[in-house]
Image (cartoon, rainbow, N blue to C red; front, top):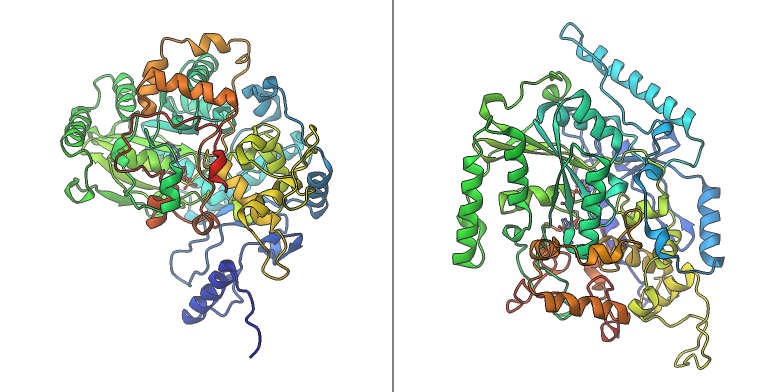
Length: 606
Ligand SMILES: Nc1nc2c(ncn2[C@@H]2O[C@H](COP(=O)(O)OP(=O)(O)OP(=O)(O)O)[C@@H](O)[C@H]2O)c(=O)[nH]1
């Protein structure tokens, strides 16, 4: 009998996809059948870009579309394709460059370095239009205006100096529409690095030209040490005085639990546990100052709090239904930019932000249950939709948008804008991460140059490259290539990046001057408030955490092999098993995790 060939999950997935396409009558020759490119262990598989625009890489390709039906690929991410040479150069560097821990100062980031004002790092605006124009002429005008915008951007920024940014005009159109129809904008950013995802031009456009208010939602506050949360809040307020700023977490008091993860216990994601909805309401009350009746929202929050106390946990079954409005294309194209504020006595809140910052999670948290699909794959939200939170409050979810900036691409990837499984070269981002986190003490890796069972007797630790880290992680996790059963470094690199994006190997950037003022932030009077928001109750526990951190100890779990390997959605069972940050039933949401910012505990990698 012939030997059975190893068959990876990925291959299996692909096979099923082809089968499904065949069933639907898709011959595989149309544009929709292209699959996103994947590079594994140096060999490059098929690339997906359309032939007419070879310099653009289309990401998150969906398996099919049919004539006359909704095209799921219309809003996928479009990023500029990197040259093969550039990719190879970075890969070589990842093999050769010895990793050096950067100084604390280098973790500090000034927003003016990310979005320098003189570089024209704006975003495409919708050109003016009127009702005399035909639909076609409007679309043509928008395309022309978009091309002019790109030309201007490239003329001011030399090749290679810009970050990845969205090249899909369809997605920018969605932003235009959401900005037009919203009364107040919830601009959502990831608390770990808010300045990467806060384009000043957008802020000035909304507060200046549109004369609307922006509530900056510093989301994922659970992933950031409390003093840093306060420092970022103050920094953003000092830079952008017209902002209302709210700290938020959809994962309040839900630390990772290794034991649970290993047992793969299932638990429903609990959207009613969020920290921050009341603060968003207060900001909106301040902004609307009585022009909209928000009492129904206030009552909803009170009702939710009561049922939360009574039931401990609310179930979806008893929850109120939420009216969802799907927007048609014509509504997108011919809407008036100057829509009346608080139309029909309804406050419309537009949730915008980069991919993966947690827009959909914020919406679910405000509603108190899942109404929007959540995924760790960036670009998951494709088409904007509106939801009535109460009869006078409407929420609008927008696809994630990557604005052009001067941020380093490796850092950008760690901030979660790129689907990890579709990266051309993940190693340099791993290097960037390792130079900024105590990865050795966290991951407890053994250098690949040391033989099996060999301990490093010399006092000096061998030097590490990014490639070594990936090899050692592959060895530790048992990632092997299907053909030659060698360490699968590509998979290991992906796994490390996912740990970072999910906040388990957590990289938090800091505002300028943070190191000098550290003591000030660590003794700030707002600390208890932030800790309560994060779901961390006692100060003693907080202190314990800081002490542990200094010891280089760490907590969290290695990724569970099967459900960590794909950029899969969290809407299915997986969310509850892994990335939904499960808690034990006896695990009250009050406790501080032991040093959650550092990640893996020694015994958890065994
Ligand atoms: N730790 C933590 N993770 C969060 C929080 N909010 C969202 N996430 C995670 O972040 C990832 C992205 O969440 P989404 O709500 O899908 O983000 P999005 O901005 O709608 O993403 P796109 O659809 O790509 O635009 C998911 O893995 C969430 O579980 C939070 O408050 N804390």
